Image 1 (cartoon, helix red, strand yellow):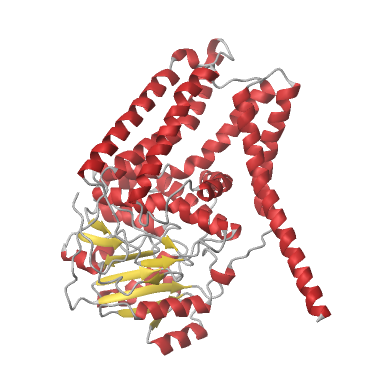
Image 2 (tube, rainbow, N blue to C red):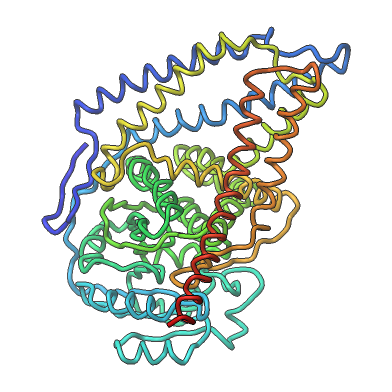
Length: 540
């Protein structure tokens, strides 16, 4: 794979050279071999339990299918990621031609996003190299926001009090980022050739446009994307965990998707060709407008380019409130797109694009899978119903080496992250926040199934994030932890014994209760600190 780094880039995003590709091919081959051996053993007919006889034995097949889904979802997802990252590539730098009409937009929701953040972002956008107009898309038509725009020389737009731009559904859906941008495009889009957009909490580098606009020399390129990098990782361990969750995606997976001509459109920051956006009728009116818009673009056979450089630094969720809000929106959005839009859109795409989108949209089923695991544990400990009859020792002999090999591949691939020097290691915080989020993922799945509409909510930013959240936010964790806690207790009071299942029941209870205990401890410390501050002030 070819590589070229513009002189102005601060970090050199890497891809595999020929020797590394051969080595990774060997790693993959061993991984596939271990997976296949485990699969051949796993799916032996003798591993189907015999809880029932006659026609009821069909229920045993269902249980075996469920436990197979629980185990194999992760294994298939991991193998799928290998097939993506093996094609990772970095684009050649292309200098943009002069004279293009460019707009640089950011959207703002008064009351949800701080004015200081707004001003800092607008200043940085105005200062970006390459001639452009900077625009603020203000959902509230806010007086103070207008004053900031006037002082900085930023154009101001608001769709407030325009009923035609605030509809319950469609491209101008009210209270959605896509609807806000579409309203601006309807009024001003024809004045520009290309539009760059950035979330209000992102600060662009001065060369953001000069390192992205050049790729539009190819008339088939619809959009150019860059990583969604969080710069507030020192703010809390939750912020660090949220960042760690994204390292592999924005590093290896997005570079791999680019190698397959289909990197995902990310709403946090990208540059788009106005003509391409018009062809698909604008941004999709959806809670995850970026994902659905990207899919629509690929149905029209457009191309895209991924620039894996730190061209903009943003703010990730630093509190449970902000993190759970973000994860609920993403999980609900992807699952909703899978059920409602993918059946229509995937057949219109190139096959490699369709299969990758289909597999990608399984990610947030992790919540359903964990819940199914809890159900299987409860069926066994309460009623003695087995999901499989396989022996423990042979399973561990085949399963553990496979998991270890997956881990070794993941660690080796860290050298190709956006910033390998700072994005490497065990990623413990990322794993912890993922464990904390799985009940949220399940609630998102349930909301989609029950057709409960989730309204768009801006992820709290800056000082709008609430550090002290009500413990009721962890009610799902308490319920799920209690269920598996009861399961573990039942293993001592019933004849239903399994060392492995007991271990998983205890681990789930410890982790679910652990998050609650940690939050309660943080609240107690915070309350004590405030009390001491008051006492100190009164004494003074």
